[in-house]
Length: 200
Image (cartoon, rainbow, N blue to C red; front, side, top):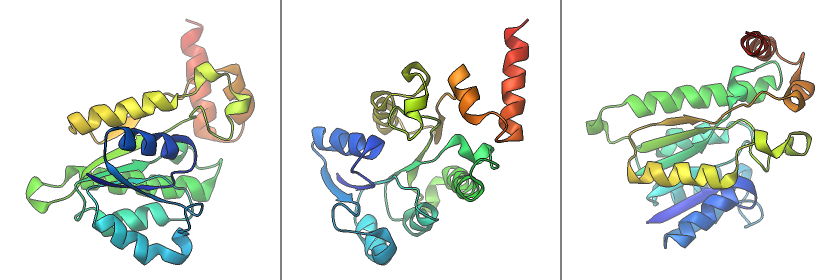
């Protein structure tokens, strides 16, 4: 299959690209490092995606994820999207959270469309902290999601694409509390409920 990986130079994008190459797919990586800046080449990127079988949209820049998805979801067989549980905690990074929430809602709608509408098979990856995330150096590695685990979810989904969303664990830890306490009311409420349950 022809696979486009948007954002392939580090982290899960790089790991996904390696997975597709290992499984003998033809991979077209898109990133600034590869000479294609989404900001300057959005129409070109959309056309490349439409000519592919699989697209992995792994970027956080502005609203490009949802803009690309809205243009390609009826032209591609499989789409994988990097989301994030940040959508539930909009006080931490308001614009980023709103974008991820809008993306999540649109993915849910696409996943519910009838087969005759020819929408893609879609997998929304609801990340918390991956082992390569910018905050991982402040979190114990046992409380992050390994890239290998994420790739295994992708592999299983390709074999049987009957689910549309996977939410990865946001593990409570002292490190996490120290990192995020008092930054979002919803998150503080979650921490409080976890502590209540732990004290029973």
